[in-house]
Length: 518
Image (cartoon, rainbow, N blue to C red; front, top):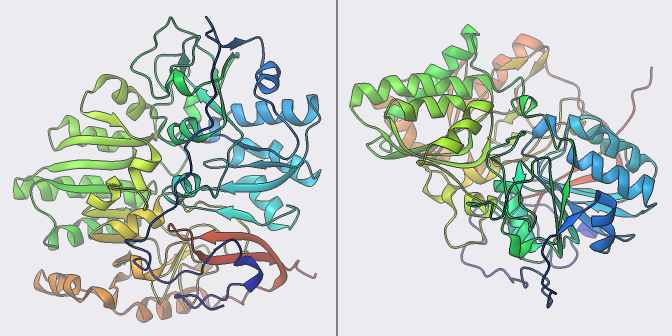
């Protein structure tokens, strides 16, 4: 069946009420069937929920073949917990047919790829898939197609009963013996536990894994003891120094700085750039650098920002310290500076992923965004964006909050170089659509700015401000002139992953790539 962005979705995937994507606002106002958020039972009062080890916690929580477990990714590439737990479930307890419903999977989770190859892990549901796990899934070794959801689509799916978590294993920087847990107050602080909060409230069983046990009550806490079944103390839950990836840096590249300045100029030209505006930026070099150039426009206009949202970085904290932002609303702390600030700054607050971006609640924060600045692996001439598959067709990225913020903000800006290496970034058709073109308003490259024809109002603002812009076809043609038109990828029939739109409809699929014949 052809969906609203022209992607052909196999009929056999449209089961259990699943629909194809019909447009970013197609399901607005419809009801989501909510299931009871958690299994409850009468509990015998206990002094402590501490287990001697993770295996004891697994046994206490009824770990079994065929279950679904979840993890969060606050530690990003420094996470130890997911692999630690999976090793116990698979190698010590001999469990099989496990589905992992993690908030994101990356280079820290290579061990999980081994369990996929062994047939012990048969399902993956995540908002990000990188590293060896992505390569293994792309090779067709997962028993069922992986399901990729946005950061807002994941809590929507959990609350709608589409994802049932048997046990959530949640790393916490500190916890007391009853399970009041936080991303702060320990030796491995990770900041906001925004992606763990929803799992703690919805899973049948919750295990807190910490390397710092503190006195009861550990409050304020991100995760409440009323939701926790067991607490395990281990030597280390993760390495905070690896939270910030190589992309999370202030760029010195003249090309990226030029694009960042253009982004700020576009923002300043719109009617939304007024006192109290709201803003979120992505993690890439030019996206982060846009903060610097936006500061100059704010000072020139004498305005400030009402709130900054999303994954909070030190660059955003710096703007607030200069008195230019009222509130920082943090679903994930992206670097050590942001982590420290969250622990010290009363105007830097933690929120859950559902509060952040769930399209099926009564007021996600993304709905109040004026501007979002995002990166891309590819953008096509319909303004569809790919942030999941590389030019080789391999899964190596994350929808994350990209589709949520693009759909909900007043002005979504994608910033990307026109080419990377010998590959065009602006192209005729992206490999995989992760953010549909009806959600993207402006594209900024070093070779020019393109405005989505749906946003003639923004184009008019740029014209009035003397900011030149071109048709996106011109950018595509220029990219092809520079590096050539890439050969079309060749796919096998096997579907290895499904990309859900944030409303749960099917946006695109990823098939197994045909191996190169040398």
